[in-house]
Length: 116
Image (cartoon, rainbow, N blue to C red):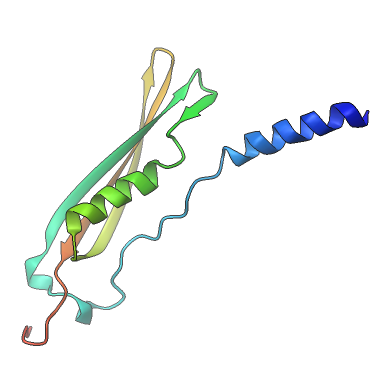
């Protein structure tokens, strides 16, 4: 019994570990005093993953992190606010495509000489 239980527990823990994804902290503004609200720009980024045969995940768990990293790259040194996440999926012949789209507004940091 013990010989069959160990591989079963190992397989179960690997399957459950595949369900974990990285934590993504969205936005970087805690108060309006940090940003120049007159110069906002809308940014959008997407990332996709595929679930082969509805069982084998390929780049599914990290798509939020990938999309947000792309958004941060577009923003540069600007701060992100008003973050909106949209999840969508599409059937493919041998699986499903999952897409995460993140929209945000990028504002420059407020300098001392900017008054509102």
